Image (cartoon, rainbow, N blue to C red; front, side, top):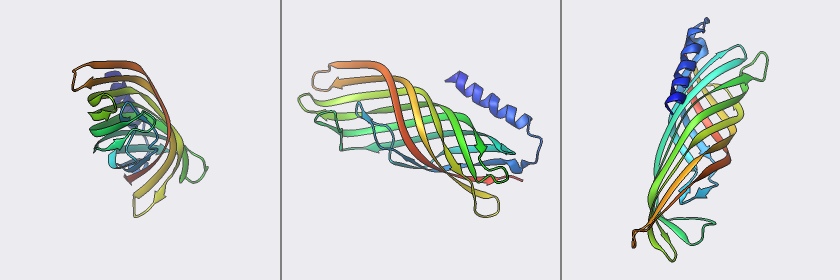
Length: 217
């Protein structure tokens, strides 16, 4: 984690030190909306909430048809009464899910003289943590913790739309490819018996994001 954050900071500094043009190539803003594919409950944890608002910060520097980008995102949400599809008679009584990722990437304009259509690739460190209580038929109430840590690659297509003055909206449609380490612990409350599981976590899912940025002059 420390090495990845250091690499992100160094890459950001390198771009700033090599930028010779005016500040109008710099954009800073927020990831206003993230729509995730709500597709994978695993060990009583959902991959993501269907829609997140104001999830993180977004930076972009562009020169000609090439661009450098970085982002940091964090979300926290609570849920209860969720039926775990495909895992037997399991009902989540209550849980809290936290999702953090930080990453860098690049983009390339597909049009020679226009920058409103581009493709992008992002690489990020991602940690997802979940804990709560669930009811499992035959075992009663269980307390669990679930942590998934690894690298996420995002590829996709984006559109840059100018609104007012130097304000831009950038909707992006892409696909997440996640590979990491999964740690799960489950304790039966009535007996105190604990079960632990370590394994590989893989997930492939589409997403839609909307960045809102200000372009500096």
